[in-house]
Image: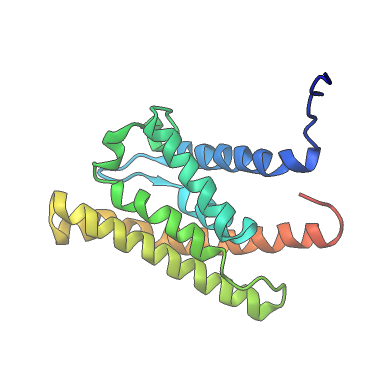
Length: 186
């Protein structure tokens, strides 16, 4: 009788896991870069969500975001201000959180080229996806504070930040892909 030999895992098989862990860590870090506001804090989460999709593709990007949200549901303090648990998914920020996997997926379908036109289209796409997140967040928040207050507290304060984060995400994408082309890797 022959004994089964121990399987070895190739480094290439571990790459998606390492990328996923790094993505969850980046999303968690972006949550802690926060300007406390009520009912919704300002964070870098949307920028990182969009970069996950744009850099890693629709499936991997949205899978990372879903993993991060699942980790929060288990009680891990990975959301803004260290929040976690099912309460975060029923409270004022739930609409924004629900929009994140969709935004990451759609960001994965934005233009991939390195020409100026592709960067412009990507910037427009990032702005549109920020609008999507704000719209779904506003729709959910309306149930807590009414439409006018939800718009004033859950959309307006985030408009300039959405513009800045979209521009920054476009620059980071261009730099990351430029480094990749030159053989610098990730």
